[in-house]
Image 1: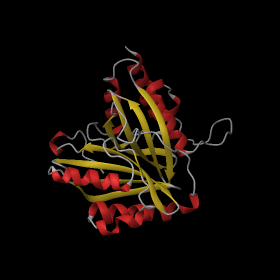
Image 2 (image 1 turned 180 degrees about the horizontal axis):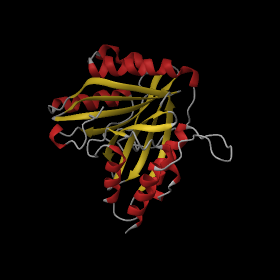
Image 3 (image 1 turned 90 degrees about the vertical axis):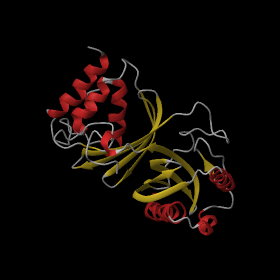
Image 4 (image 1 turned 135 degrees about the vertical axis):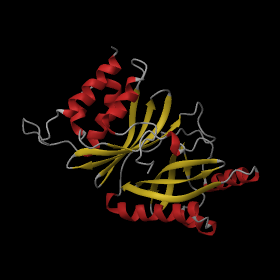
Length: 283
């Protein structure tokens, strides 16, 4: 029995019997939901059993379509990992009401960049969504990776304002194609891009999209499902097409002085329904 399987037993088996009291027995203050999520993700690598108590063992709704519902489904996936292969480095973590969302550099059945979203009820994790993309071997045309860049959360008082700005951008530009409004969302041509195939600057984005369109490859968002944010960072969760593929788009934006300044994303193909391992849907 390898270390990974033992970790599964500890993390998910112990959760069934975990104490439901949110206060530590020694009277210490309960950690934040954000800290719980970071610790839980790291436990995939370390096998630490303590974060198991952050999950509601009676209610864990899974939206990763390759994983069966509940804790048992995720445990089955972990059991397939080669011993000592998992690596988890959460670079950014944010909290918005009952939701925590993270931006993580994984080695999980190979190198991947992922966004995870967790929903809490009464201090326990009850629901999970994610999106993964294989980590590129080279930086993008402007030398950026999918994970580098600023991490500091600022402008907390502008959270709702920034969420509204980004929501309008995604709906106006990416869903409705109102390109005449594009310039209003940026400070001139300034725009830092972490997509593996697109260079910096607004002009770099438009030139790339025009070049793809010339090859018959079009990007079209159909629907925005969720907008989450904390301060100067906003995450949107959408679905749509890129070429012939139907995808889930997770886009993280950094807002500065009321303009979109930086962008990271993860694009994942949505499995055909006959291949789903749970019935909860991707979104």
